[in-house]
Amino acid sequence: MWKKACDTASKCISEAKEYNKQRWDKSHMEPDFKEGDQVLVSTVNFNNLKGPKIMRDSFVGPFTIIKLIEKNAVEVKLTKECCEPLRYDHIPKKVTRNI
Image 1: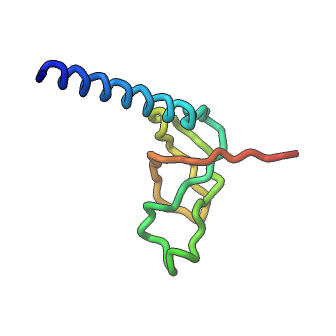
Image 2: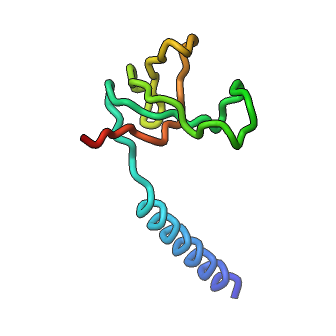
């Protein structure tokens, strides 16, 4: 009886794992950033912005990618308003211009 319960639990875990993988793969896209691309940077984790959080921009930019660090991490070229070099681990939006 114990073996049957363990086998059933193992089967349920495997099915749940496969189901979750299919859901993830369906909605997740790998980023295809290249050097020179322009991206918007999320301000979710910025602590140095003034004013009430609800009134702040959700994204800043566009910034040009100057170096790819990892799949989801890039170094961007800052504008004149920014003065310290920053690395971003989460860049959610790629800038596209419709002409």
